[in-house]
Image 1 (cartoon, rainbow, N blue to C red):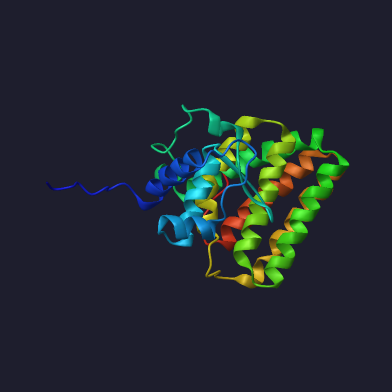
Image 2 (cartoon, one colour):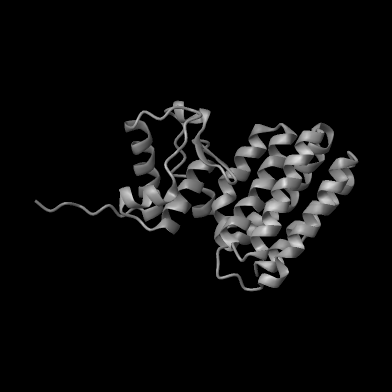
Length: 233
């Protein structure tokens, strides 16, 4: 009997395999997901592919990624209807479209965050920005990428809008793919640290308008650094 080969993208297959592994090992919301190195060994996959699958699971709301701590099972893992593998931003939209979406969405998000940000929130954002800066200095670009997007996700959480937070998670794989090494202009990456600083200073003053302007500037500059053509209209 001829067995039909699974022709789904490798990442999509891994998403299902990791979900099955999480269920079979009895993981519950709040439990730590096995490290990517261990997942790669157990599933016989490359670490970059596992990383993409983990990011997709985060976008689906099934796990959450905490910079420097790892991945944890999210509350959404208990909802069997939460299956978005057939509809992912990565498969449907281009990097250009996502950066244009970020230009509008994240500017509005940071305005909301300015209303709610506590001193503790600001401290967490500053810590993520500093983590990114140190990682760039040490040429740990994947770690810098995680801290960078972690800061943007933290702003969405501070804004208090779950829909915005989940949309950011959905397009995360596209952003991380555009930032994956080899980095074309590593000397320019520290620009993001300064741009984040402008956003955080505006948040500290609860100046939502200035924070939104700083965020739009940051998104346009980010697209330029990553060689993704972008025209803000």
